[in-house]
Image (cartoon, rainbow, N blue to C red; front, side, top):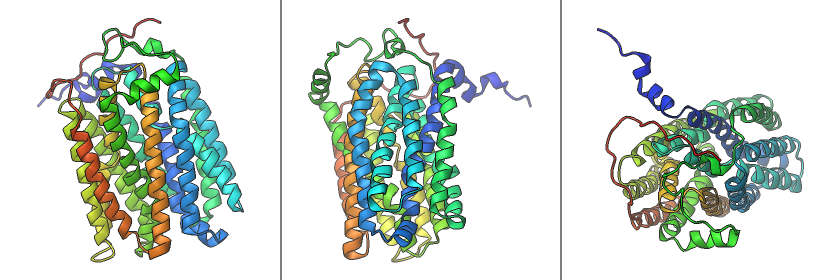
Length: 433
């Protein structure tokens, strides 16, 4: 029996079709891995911060909420700058600010310090090195298999949970939460040379190939005109509503409150972090799969299914303290599959319905509303926990709004024929600037 040569391997075929694009995907994968771990770390450190510094769950939820608000405010600004100046300088500044936020967070001793370090500097860093910046950058480097490429890069936002969050949990358990934040700051700084060498220093105009969807639309130069173009687009408005709910049910609920909830159910901290790692592993597969499917099947229906299944997964979470704490693993698998899998489908719909010349701003505005929804979810979770000593009401609310997001997705019309199953086609050569 003869084996196929490596050059015929499907993975090699994808890389050969667009090698520069896949290098960008790799760098974005690592950058998102670092920053998403930083965002999730406060949930892991929350019980220690409450014990060591005497802060309440409500206050720490406010810290997270303000970080998400800063991230929300930064997202459209950064998206607009990305459309004008390209990704390299954007990513470098974001990694530096995030490293600063982590260093300052490791030294806090009072409430105003954590608000400055994590909420302000952290929120700014999260807004710069974000999934919307990665998705917009990658969308310009791909025509075929755009959804799959976006899904692979954004899988980095959960890969860090697998590789880094358990390490931080061990550091936290042995040395304390301060050294955990020092560890994350060092990892963040180590990524700067990678961005400097591998992210091309190109103008966005050079990333548009002739004939690509959205590459020839007339776009106003002024920000007000570009925003008007977005907010008069029905597809964009439907995506805006669903993506706000996405933030409420994912960033606000799970990224902030999953670990404290698991610990409150009597699950040890390292086991809880491992369960979150399992969720992240399934998240990676879910994003890659949804990206691959978004290149081939009806995208609005796919997006609706993702939101509905995400909402149903909260039923399992409600049963964890009632029946068996081991159900936390079932939830981690199910929610993980349908968590970030909205990103490649949403990016693909923006690229084809709104256009590539404004994709940075488009995804930035979507990210702003996503973060606002996340801030509301984080705040509501903390307040209801302090008031009722449980999260049941919040989980029920998450189920309800996820169904609304599914309905909004179905109002979008597919404007692209189904491709079916096929091997990747070579990318068109970028037009010269």
